[in-house]
Structures are given as structure tokens and as C-alpha cells.
Length: 92
Image (tube, rainbow, N blue to C red; front, side, top):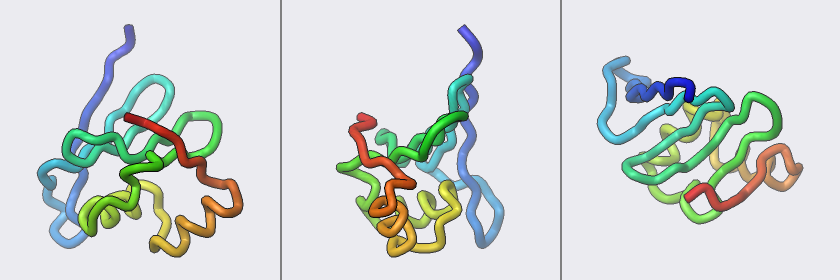
């Protein structure tokens, strides 16, 4: 099995690592985890996937989800979901 790598996300304000917000690198793609919940998955091939139950869970989760996905706002994410550029699925 290839190695998984886990990194704390960094604060956009201070660039310091933040607690409870992680990027998990796997051979097949990258996950965003907030606390113990997988929020998003970027496969190496294919479309971005968001957990249908948790992607819009809290202000902090949204802040780091936007950083992970590089979408600027919830409005942008909703438009991408509508356009089928993002897939909502169960990641947990």
C-alpha cells in the first residue's frame, strides 16, 4: 500500500497550521477533512465530490472548503453543483 500523507490546513491570515482542518493525500486524490468528517474529495481524474450532508455544515468548514476547492463563495459552489461541475455524494 502506498503511503497516505496528512497535513493541517493553514490559516489564510497567519499561514499557521490550524486545528481540526486537514488535507489527506492518497495515491488516487486528495480529501478535505474537518474534525472527523470528510467534506470533499478531489480525485486525480474526475470531478470534485462534496459530501451531500456536511459540505455546508459550519462557517469554519465553509471557510476551509473554499480554500481547498478554490471557489470563492457558497454561491460559486452552488452554481458548480447546478452545472454538474461538482458532484454531491456520501463521503462518510
